[in-house]
Length: 365
Image 1 (cartoon, rainbow, N blue to C red):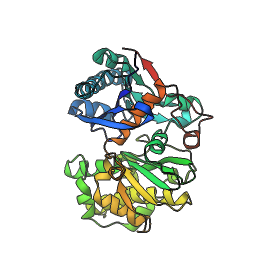
Image 2: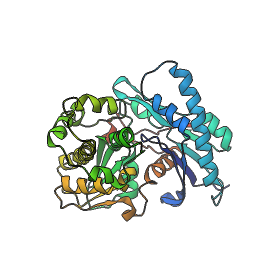
Image 3: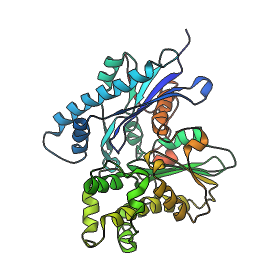
């Protein structure tokens, strides 16, 4: 009996907009995306997940109910992709929705109900990819550099792959085959929160509002004083640190800054912290490739190009054959494939774990 090489990867990230899914084929060890789908979160589910990002009453029950809602959204995405599959699926690999990330306390929490997802889909489900790395002394994040190396690495070429979701992270793919990387800080999380507060929009389309403002140098300097930016790697972060209350505290001395100028400055913060991380690697970078929602923010990409000195090409991962909104879901499909084939999915040089580990837990159909 031939073993299937078809996997579905599901990712719902810090931006809390919905579920990105891909149908992938790893036949022969290759990485091929066959189909993609997106299921937006119902407003009530999004609100519930957003509320779980901070401490509150009755959290255990609220999280369990939200997990059931997530499983329903995941199942819709699986159904859309499964209908287009050329054969049976090996498994569904699902990241879950991060509501706490505290590796310094030895845990990370991705809300999910993989047992219900297996029941709804009739397919094996692989979940809980981060906790084994943390158990091995790692940060549990970022996990995508191993996939970035497999999908985008080129011998003799130094590339930076930058994921800009709610949080930004870099994967440095060095010419000699080494891979380094970590979370750089806020990606879209503050940009989305600020435009939501002032314009009622979920995101700044193409960075148009930010581009209408002017970067406030003193405010940017104050934002860059955050201790996280100066910590050595390995390190990872999330909404536990970078949230609107964090921003409000730093805006207290800048009440005269126009809202559009704050948006421009937040864009510069994302670009600057990513650029600083890349430059700190000390390697001459041949090109930078961006994935995640930030890849569709032209103002942010121009800011990143400028923060890198204006000489390093900055493009989206589409130039390497994978659309930027598919990369993370595809990464977790790949991690599911690695789990099934008993291969490690983490990179100790990135996460700080004591060694390579097979990541994930299986919920059979």
